[in-house]
Structure formats: C-alpha cells, structure tokens
Amino acid sequence: MSHIRGRFSKPADNLAAKYTASLPFDRRLYPYDIAGSIAHAKMLAKQNIITEDEAKTIIDGLKAILGEIEQGTFEFKAEFEDIHMAIESRLIENVGEVGRKLHTARSRNDQVALDTRLFVTEAIADTIKALRSFQRALLDLAEANKDVILPGYTHLQVAQPVLLAHHFLAYFEMLERDIARFSDCFKRVDVLPLGSGALAGVAYDIDRDFVAQELGFSQVSRNSLDAVADRDFVLEYEADAALCMMHLSRLAQELTLWSSAEFGFIELDDAFTTGSSIMPQKKNPDVAELARGKTGRVYGHLMALLTTMKGLPLAYNSDMQEDKEGLFDTVDTLLNTLGVFTGMLSTIKVKGEKMRLAAERGYILATDLADYLVKKGETFRAAHEIVAKLVNSAAKKGKTFAELNVKEYQKFSTLFGKDVYEITVETSLAARDVIGGTAPKRVKQALIKARKMVGRG
Ligand code: ARG
Image 1 (cartoon, rainbow, N blue to C red):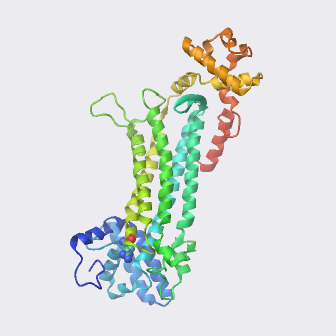
Image 2: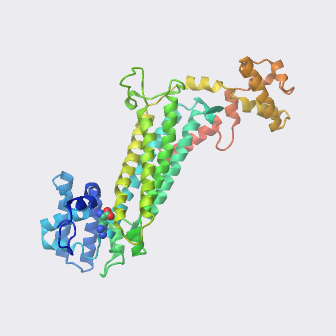
Image 3: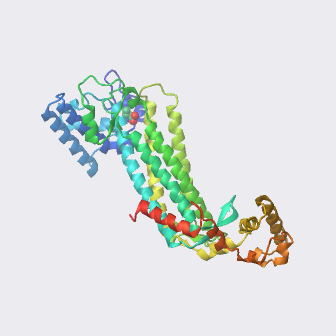
C-alpha cells in the first residue's frame, strides 16, 4: 500500500510503480521534508486541529526518523513512491494511528513545493559561499602577480597589453554578478507554499504565518494554484547556474590554452592534471576541460525543465516530478566545479616572463603608435591607416617596431620623431588611465576595492 491506492482494486503494475516512483532520487529531500512536517504538526496543535500530545508524539517520531536516516538504519523501501510517503509510512509504523493525523490540512503537492523551496534556499547559500571562496582565490592570484603583463587578445589575436591582475578581475566581476543573480533568486524562493493544499487551499483554520516563521520564510504565497504549480524558482536557480557555468567554462578554456606548450603562460599543479596512458610527455588540464564539458549538462537541465513546464495546465501535474534530478545535478555540478576550481587556482604557477615576451610580440603597440600620431595632430582614422602600412612594411622586413629606424618610420609620416622609441608596453598600460582601465594604478585601486568586498575568508 505504498503507492496511494485507496480507490483502486488492483496493485500498481510493477514496472509502472517503478516508473512513477521518485524515491530513488527525492530521498535527499528528507531533512526538508521532516523540518516541514515538524512545523506543520506544531501549527496543527497550536490551532487545535490536533492535540498537543498528538503533536508531541508526531514530532518525536519525526525526529527519530531523522536520526534513523542520518545513521543509515532507515530503510528506503522500493515500494514507497516518494520521500513523503516513505517518511509518513515509517512514522505510522513507529507511533501508530496518530501518525495518520500529520497529513491533515496538507497535500503532497504543497509538501513537495515546500521541500524543494527549502532545498533551493540551502543550495543558494552554499553556492554564494562557494562563489565567494572562488573570488578570493582569484584575488589571491591577481595580488600575487600584480605586476605581470599579459598580451590582451581580441579574436584570439594579440591586441593590447593588459595586466594579468586586470584579466583575473574581469572574472571577479562576472562572479560578482553571478552572486547578485543568486541573491535575487532567493527573494522569490523565500515564499512558503504550505497551506495551499492540493490546489485550492485547505478547509481548516491553519496559521500559515506561524509555519512561515518556524521555517524561516519571510513571505507566504498569495495564490494556492500558483504555489503548487510553479517551478520557476527551480528554473531561476538553473538559469543562474547556467550563466555561472558559462563564466567558469570561459576561464577553463583560457587555462587550457594558457597551459599548452604553444602559450606556456601558466603551469597547472600536478594535483589538477592527469597524464596520458600512451604519451608520456602529456600533462592534461582535465579539471578545466571537464568544467567546460559539464557546462553542457547544466544548460541541458535548464532546457529540459523549461520544456517540461511549457505545456502544463494548472495546477500540479506529475510531469513536475521531473524537476528534481536536473536540479540536484545542477547544484552538485556547480558546487563541485567551484570547489575544484578554487583549489586549482590557488596552485597555478604563473610564468610571468613568458607572458611578458608574448606581450612584446605581434605589433601589440600599434594602437599606441596611432595614439602617438593623434597627439601630434593627426586624425585617428588617418593615424590608423599610417600605422597599418607601417606594420605591413615592418612585417615584410621581419622587423619589430623597435628594430625600425627613424627614417623607416618617417616614410609613413613625418610626425614620427625619436620619441617614438619611448613607447613601451609599460607606457601603453599606464596610458589606459580611465575608470575600469588597465593602468597599474587603476588596477591597484580595483584590487583593494575587490578585497574589501570579499575579505580574506
Ligand atoms: N513525488 C512527487 C513530486 O516530486 C510529490 C508530489 C506528488 N503529488 C501527487 N499528487 N502525485 O512531484
């Protein structure tokens, strides 16, 4: 009698029972299910719907079940459809008939909405904490290498020099927005659905504000149909997670490139790489690659649930049970990725000289030469064209800017003088002295500000 069969004359088909069961995965909702039931039982007694004695028996019984589950002695019997039925049946088994009163003024529809909201609440807190730790690791790395110069790229072509710290601070900003998104999501998760019943509310004089307070919700849902039918709070977490994984995946891609022999900008610690079973020279950036790879499944869970929800009439439909595995996997994948990335970042070896050498290559100071001509009276567009021609001619001769003599410069513009040799990677950086720019003094301020935001942990 584990699946609810009151109306039915036959037991469910074995395969069908297995097909419809959620216990194998929703069992991890047990702490929220029990907390919700305890708050509900307290409220039922306070409202004289059950007696204080009955409530005490039920609450003690629920606490005992929590103990059983935590000690591993609770049997998650396959015959139970879901975690709600498994716990309630065990309660009745342990405390007798009075256990049957717990489900008064409640439905599994508002119960599962409650459990899932409590789960997401905790997931958001864990996610924000993990994001903060990761931001600290990024900052540590930026501060430890605050003078290192990196070739900045656009189109993966050498563009202009930037400080490595500036580059890491770019990710810091992305993660800051991720944190803001998760915090904002919490506002909409923080709503008690219990008391909505199956769909229409319940026919008892319940006290929803009391339950909300017991469970730490700051609001109570305003519409019973919406409260049991909506999963947009799950989707929102998943959407925020998808964006966050996208950010991590871009960093993963850069670390993968940078650790290659072709770039040689960083060395990943042995603890975060693996060897090849056939090519002894290899040190593969597996952690970074898998973070990039796992981004796909997180996007997938978001698309899956959006698709599941799109055609559903109000209110609850069993389709919605499909929300859980994707949600759980999203939370696990994101937290694991943040955890392992934090470790990986704190052990990265930055090869500053290699970055610096690369920053000297590829006519990286071309924009600065154009700016130089503008400051001497040329228009920017004309200056751009002059320097483009200069680059072509230098490339043909196989020379760098520094290797050209003044006459070679002056062939393209008479505005060029000896002071053109004063343009260096350092002057290029220092010139970007605007809010948000890579000038060392701006980056120094940005590092201080960022550290104030996240502390030392
Ligand atoms: N296992 C179900 C779920 O995860 C619980 C709610 C079931 N409600 C129902 N009326 N079948 O969504």
